Image (cartoon, rainbow, N blue to C red):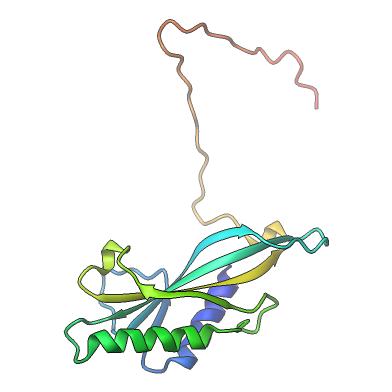
Length: 167
């Protein structure tokens, strides 16, 4: 997934000169506008290839963010959204994945971090095949989770002593 995000960022930056393209940025600091924010929104079951690999349809979203005080901002955000969709159309970003299929280009008001800006969202999909669990390393700092279950008052408690631990 890291390779996919990097390839998309690189490809869109080349296609949209003068536009800052980022994946999952920290929006607390300063950002330059116009801005395109790319993120993986969803993974769904894809067409299984019968090779043992897992096929997934990755739905990606890219938000075009424009300063509403800029001259002709309403038109500019729409033009950039269309340019972004054209830049994604049928691309594979040089990776062994299915071609991009643009699904929608629409206004977006779902990111609280972007309130006060003009935002349009371009959504597209790629089919990707995942074959090796090592492609998804555990994040740095991963920890264990301990879950404790306490029965409700009055509930009968049952404890499995685990007499047979043979593997």
